[in-house]
Length: 77
Image (cartoon, rainbow, N blue to C red):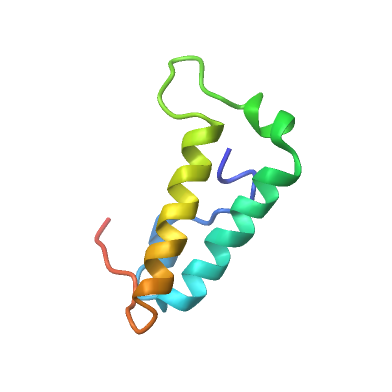
């Protein structure tokens, strides 16, 4: 669902400025909101994640990026 809405691979975010990542997250959330029926249809049958959870994740992480605008995204994969 996230990929279909434009979310990149996680490793592409490592080292990126939080301001850029926050904007991308908002764009993906906006896309999900534009076509809720399309993306709800992608809810996994096993119940591990759903449309509403994806929006909550994106909105929360985008808000965190806004709060830490001088940060870069870290991680290891």
